[in-house]
Structures are given as structure tokens and as C-alpha cells.
Image 1 (cartoon, helix red, strand yellow):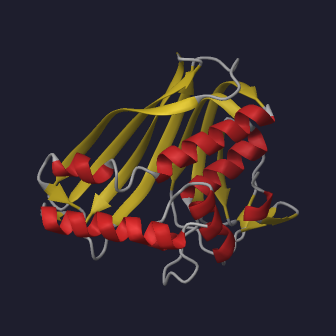
Image 2 (spheres, helix red, strand yellow):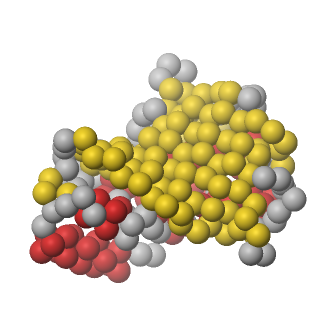
Image 3 (tube, one colour):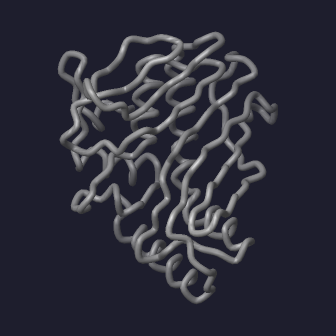
Length: 232
């Protein structure tokens, strides 16, 4: 599922602009300009790093991922050894910190399903969830420089006797602090209608400005047009 989105030599992994951009648009339905091939400050999608870790180490009942730095096409990541706690680094800088506990499953069906369903959920949060959530407090992101940074995510599964859980949104929150804010997107994991786990994604927002409906309408229209044009 992921083999076309990175290259590995020994324990070293690199991700090209083309691979990061393709993953964002083909798998995650994420059209953030930071993931464009020609972006001035290109950034590999955090969800691709998350997916690579799951693909390598499987699914644990409790998992927490903290995103510490932006990976571009020049970064050579060192795939770590599995442990309860480990970092994804280039030998000096930490880009992703991982904590795991409980039982672990290496079932490829479960791994592929969770990757696919989570990254689709993650990619569709902007603008469909984030903009209305911020709008409830009469604020919005800066449309000329939308700074929404992936901070962390966690998954807490009740058990691992599952094959293909689906995700549904649950009680998002937005905390405003001047021109900055924190977004908490919660989700439930369901299999055959049964709640089998929960999770959350945390993001930081800066450059917040007063809400303007006309600007929001233009931003959503631009995003939808961009998605229509760029979708593979």
C-alpha cells in the first residue's frame, strides 16, 4: 500500500516531493499547498510518517504520535528499532516521537484499513470541520497564509480483535488565545456498529483573524476548485 510513497536503503528512508504530494492527494484527500510538488516550503504529510510507522511496527492498543519537525525531500530518516517509546530522526533532529502500549497486532488487513480510514478522516478536516468550528467563535484562519500545524494524534483501542474499523467525528473543540488557537478533533472507531476505540488529533493555528463570511466563501470555493483541478 505504501511502497510507492518512499524509498529505503538499509535503515534510511527518503520521501521525494512527488511521493509526498501523491500520497497527500491520492490517499489522504489532502490538498494543503505545503504538500504540492512545487511548494516553496514543501513538507511531507505527517500522515505519511504515521502510516510508515504503523506499516513497520503494526497496531498497538494505545498509540500516541507527537510531530516535532517538518520533513522535506532532503531529509534522510532513520527507521528506528521498535520499542514502547522511540523517535524518528535523521540522526540529529527528532521529527516524530512515538509512544505505544498494550497488545500489538501486525495483521496487514487491520494496518492497511486503519491507515486508509484515518488519513482520509485527517485529510478532510480542512475546510469542512475546522472553518465552521472556528466560526462558532467568530474567527477564521488567515486565508493568505493559513498556518495550521499538526501537533499530535493518539488512538486508544479497546481490543485488537478487529479487521476494518471505520472512523466517525466526535465532539471537536477549539480553544482561542488571541491570534493563536488549539484545535482538538476527536473520533470514534467502529466495527459492525460497535465502538471499538477512540482517538484524537491536535492542531495548532496561528494568524487568526476576525470571521468574514465572504472571505470564507471565497476560501472554500478556491479550495474546492483547487481539489477538482489537482485530484488524480
